[in-house]
Image 1 (cartoon, one colour):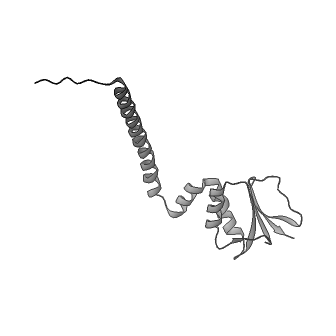
Image 2 (image 1 turned 45 degrees about the horizontal axis):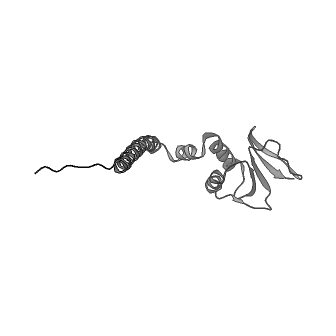
Image 3 (image 1 turned 90 degrees about the vertical axis):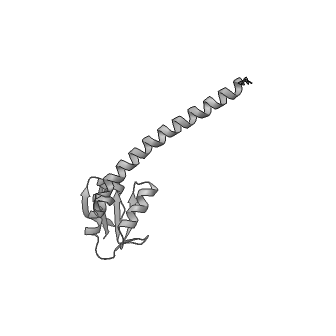
Length: 136
């Protein structure tokens, strides 16, 4: 005995949309995974310092290294930087043992070319994007 199958047009459309959605989702996931895997493979071969530079960006990491070399001992500093929250928190993490303080003797200035504060002079200059000011 032969059965006839009746397809409801609404069901066919819904199934077609779901199949299309899952196909596009799978393509996007594979492409994203390939990019993430390539990044992982690249980062895996880097040294710790190179990983930090990769995460922060070469310029900001160079400035961070400059600050670590120029700030004395465990000097506290005030941060005047044009950075997003993510990069600010990373910068503060990597510059340890130096700490942020409102009453610091130093001000670390990054990406604020016209920044000036009365009572402070240039202590050391990184380049046009960054410098360290010291209380007079």
